[in-house]
Amino acid sequence: MKLALIQMDIAFGLPEVNRAYVKNQVEKIVAQGQVDLIMLPELWTTGYDLTRFNEIAEDNGQDTITFIADLARKHQVHFVAGSIANRKHDKFYNTLIVINSNGEVEKQYDKAHLFRLMDEDKYLAEGEDQGLFILNNYVSAGVICYDIRFPEWIRTHMLNGAKLLYVVAEWPKARIDHWRTLLISRAIENQCYVIACNRVGEDANNRFGGHSLVVDPWGKVVAEAAEEPTTLYAEIDMLEVDRIRKTIPVYQDRRANLYRLQK
Ligand SMILES: NC(=O)CCC(=O)C(=O)O
Image (cartoon, rainbow, N blue to C red):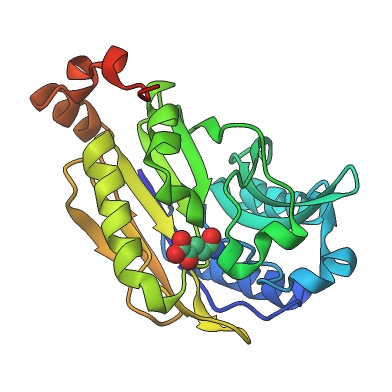
């Protein structure tokens, strides 16, 4: 499977500017040769302009769904279309959107773990569902940024059949060593591919660290970006997941009956 991760800067609170940038990047990517999947970062239409979500959030993700579905159909490419500011039932969510190459929505996942250090808990509602979906015939999990600090959340998706973990993020440079270590750890412990798209640039509170990564199920970094706006390309072989899971059979060797809290 051939992947292209758009590691972009984000124009704060300006969805139209960000959409124009993404359209341009997607056209450049497909002009260079066919890829199977394109990925975008967290809150890529607005950035963390949380105090203006009332004005700029989309109703049920409709603007982004229409925009990405057109690109997906036109270029016959799947999208893990980052996350967006989403209004549902009078609440705001940070919602990951997945669209297949026919332009159909495969998944909308609302961020489950809200990140207090960036005020998400003050403005957003927590998601209540898992990020499991099937894309390009593979059972996959999609999570958002801070979610990767919860190994039990990722493991739950793997026990439900995922072999790939997509992570969309706005991860600050100040903790970029955590980002790399957590992503590589999630790949090793779950024996899955980890495909992680971060942003670059800055807003009033944070400088974002880039280093989008593709990690194989052995924990080897297949591709890594630096800290500039770029498109990160990678090719992955899904048979590798089965090979690694056979070599060290951690899913068979789990002792689930022991993993419980002491009273
Ligand atoms: N956008 C986020 O969820 C950031 C998470 C983060 O920075 C962390 O350290 O965790």
